[in-house]
Image (tube, rainbow over all chains, first blue to last red; front, side, top):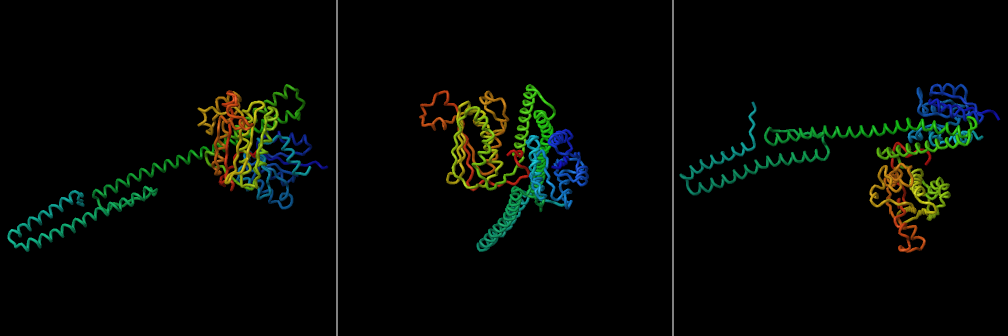
Length: 125
Length: 380
């Protein structure tokens, strides 16, 4: 089976590192982005299999990034996206649902293993 | 220069006016016939009556009008001002009232803006606390996770033990931050209640599941008495949180081989939830504080040093905001009497024990409450 690519857009370096090390151990190819604009550029260029987007990021926030990715007709319209948050804000939850995103991962409530399992489940692995 | 007469001056003038007429008439009467006296006397009576009537009417009507406008302002229209038509006492009173209203209005405006400022400061605190506290907490959580899993290389038993302690303490901090955020959302009033068709028994079981390892380890006898329910209009996260917070206390404070009973029944109008335990109970003198923020019974603190004292405060807010009621009994002889025992069968050392928490929620469901924030994290 081909190696799956995951894009992690998150401005907190330590957090990106924890996630990417874990996913690399699990056999994923990890692409990192530290702000929304970088995330969008890399995403459109490399078209990863799944994305994890932090909501609060410099330059462009995760919600804006989500909308921009969905604007891409072929790949972006259907790629699975998981939002990373500190709090599941009701406004963001309903806004994201408009873009077929239903997974809000509240960081403090998730163990790394469970994060990996969620991603695998999204990719039908 | 405008000459203005005081009210008292006017009345004085009127009296002088009538007195003059009286003197003039008296002068005629001395020389006139009886008929003249009667006619003139009657005339004076009629004139003075009419004048008094119109003068008093003139003043009383102004006072009535003034009163009407003052009432309008008192009803909340603080920006209203009354126009003073004359510069007499009533006019002056009007001006004083306007001045008073002006000051009152500024005062209220200051209070309102202060209130908004405080509410905003609280909301800002929530936002800052959520981000600033949760980010490092999740970083700690994930790295400890990573280390314990051996992903960064093998660790020995001792290291594993310590790392697990770090993990546990971090979880406690996360729980505390979550509870504080909830309290702040309750206090600011931004939390939402979103009822949807919900299986209440499933929700109780889901909350219970988390405590099963501890219940088994402490050999606690668990009794469940569930009625039959259709799907009810409840906020599934909030109702689970209610069960979770109450059970968390019951499990924590019930001693080994104690009993916990969960009853969920239907009455004519309500869902009746009753959770009893044979725990340490709530000291009588501390019972009035039971549902207040940060309350922990002094006996509870001796049994378990860990606890935020926020759980029941949150439960009470959820229940009451959704249209339900909550109350408790302690000591609760509920479970001891259940086993067919009489009051006198209960040993003295157990009489002071146990708590029963009662909750009713209308069968028609929880009351919807719009709000920008959900209580707590995705755990519920």
